[in-house]
Length: 137
Image 1: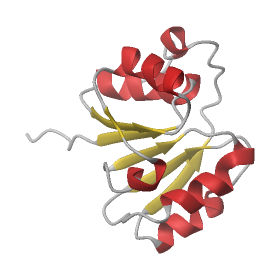
Image 2: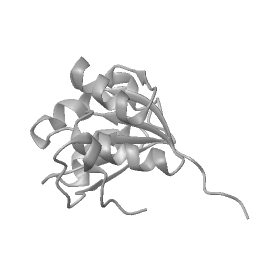
Image 3: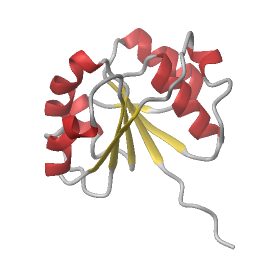
Image 4: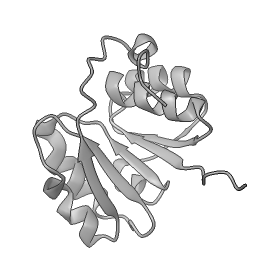
């Protein structure tokens, strides 16, 4: 029996929700490849939760991994997507943790070669450490 392929995770917007999900995926064997966007303090807090990861500019994030988790607020999504779309998305899945924006908001990333998806985790993330509690496998 072969094991499932492991993803190289990139988090764009290292806040509570994205960090919590990244930690849950990392705990299941996936590797955190990079963090992008947010403040230096947010990236440091995320790194404390998910382990060592490179810091990359948002414009380089699309090519830095196989699963690009976009955890930015909906009102900043268009700017982040425009910056990400400068990269090469071939082979990557760009996933937005949407509040109210559909996957179509990621269309420029599809034009850059990425597969796109969006979902709302239907969970509140009060903090990074406790946010992953209750996340299923």
